[in-house]
Length: 228
Image (cartoon, rainbow, N blue to C red; front, side, top):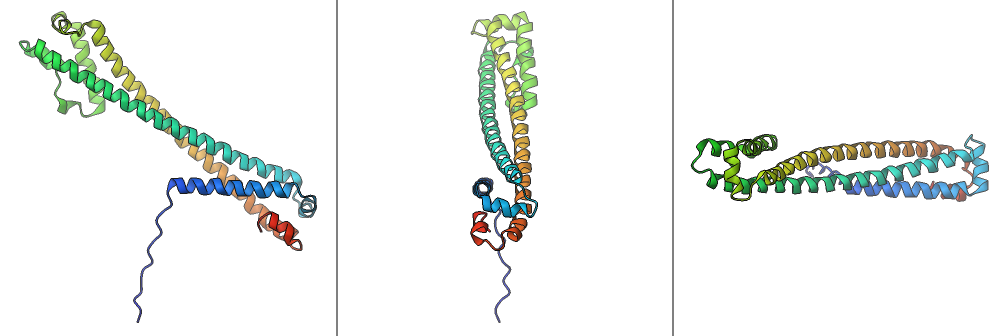
């Protein structure tokens, strides 16, 4: 007796494959609708079932909407990807900037334990992004607000302007994070818009096809224009 084999489930299609399938479907429907819209006999027969030429125009508009939202989504994804790169660069700049600052502070303030504790934060405390932003900003501001710290730091190039420049890197990092969050939300909205447009196009096409099959039953040549 043959063994009862459990069928292997199909792997879900990748996002790229789904995107390509939608693009292909949209182009196919548009091509069929354009062919139908330009055929007088087909329009006359469809009119007997209540489908006016304007309905084909509406279908084309739905195809155009899918294309427009498809393009908008692609642009949004690229914008989110670029924002991610900016965030990564800002993070590297801010963290490497603090590493350099800490190295200098540890040496010039080696005889001042209080100053070292305030300015030289251990790496283990800086893994969390929010703690890094908050604690390092506090360290820089401490360097600025204590004249003895600042005099020592200035001897190795960290005067007030240089520390302010490091603070600016932290602000750039915060802004880059906010920009990425905004870009990701925009990409999510763009995806939802595209899916809604695709559903509207598919529903319109699904409504049209059975009507065409009845109206054009005796004209396989005209049905062929619609791929039916």
